[in-house]
Every structure is written in C-alpha cells, then in structure tokens.
Length: 134
Image 1 (spheres, rainbow, N blue to C red):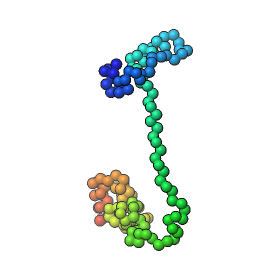
Image 2: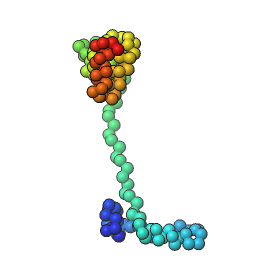
Image 3: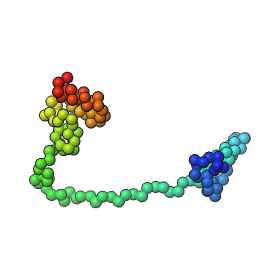
Image 4: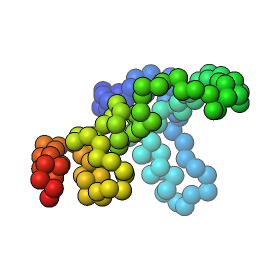
C-alpha cells in the first residue's frame, strides 16, 4: 500500500495503521462503501502529541527598576525619531526630513509607499517630487 502512495510516510509502518471500521447506524450499503474507501486509502494512527513546549518567559522589569522617568537621556546624540519611518535617525526616508509631519502630505504618502513597497519607479517619483516639487 505504501508503494502506491510514496508521499505518505505514515503508511510505511503497518503496525500504526488504523483498522478498517464503519460508523454504526448507517443506512444499508453505506457502511460497506465507507469500509471500501478506508481500504483504498488507509488512515494512519493519530499523530503524537506535538504541542509546542512553552518558551521560558523573559524576566519582567518591575516598575521603577530602570530609574526615574525624568532621568537624563542615555542616548544624548540620538534623535527622538530614531527607528521611526519618518524624521532623522537610523530609518531616515529617502530625501531626508523636511520639517513637521504635516508639512507635505503628498511627500509623506510617497515616502510611506516607498518604505512599504520599495521599487525603482517609486524611488524615481519620490526623487523628482523632492527636486521639482510635482
């Protein structure tokens, strides 16, 4: 049987196959059809317990353990927007920061589109909008 279904590794061990059986209370002939179908493609044993083991939780920092909230910054040379998809910082968009967030909604939209779907066409469009303003 395993030769007929080479991609079914569960059929390679005949000791683990489920015996052919029919559900009780079926109409005449249905139990025979069900058993014939089980003989054509036998069922494997139910899988073993594959529940993932829970990962060890990271220790939680208790409130106040990092110091007071109004303490001096630990990164004085890093802009507040570092890591954000706008403004100066590590993830600075193409064209640099142009000022307040609401200064040019078209430019902001083009930058967001380019950050999400980077392509040569969007880069050219963004570059020409920055240089020429349209």
